[in-house]
Image (cartoon, rainbow, N blue to C red; front, side):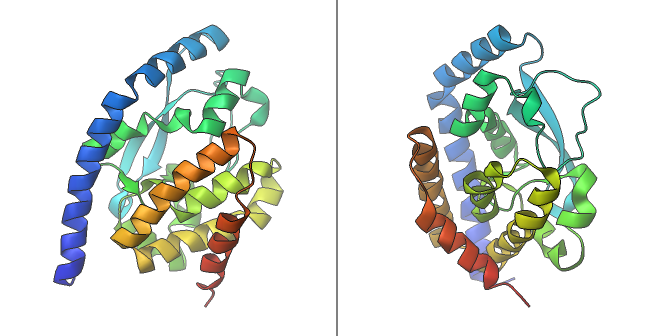
Length: 224
């Protein structure tokens, strides 16, 4: 690994620690509102603990605010969430990304980074980290990144599991490869900026067409 890449990884970790610590402090009031909203909507656990794999495919528990009604029989292996279980406050948290704030803990602890590939479900490693996608496991997954933004802008509009796997998943996986190949501070800063824009666009019901087009172009550039 070149000295430049080593320096990037070291400074990236330092940024992750500082950004996640500040984020936890600044968003504390939002956490309180999230907890109250969850308990009023569907009393039960505040957090959803997802089984994910991180760097080198090492397992970890990813924190999220619970946005769906408790169902012990639910299928957690699906690429798509069961929209019928999402309660109204949960839907708002998902659209505004409040449900993912607890992942700041994962970033601070070193399981994740602020920007990186989409975290892989432990039950889907053979698909998301297999074959030509194996290199994606060489870095920490991120709170945001090209594949996460593509899923947010476009993937969330596809509710059918089969259609999601056909229309969304291939591009999502290629965007993870794109990030691995082109990771840099310039791309990380762009992804942070785009994430804020996408969230604001979603809250105010504005389109994110230009960003979506750019993400698709990046995925198509990875076709072998």
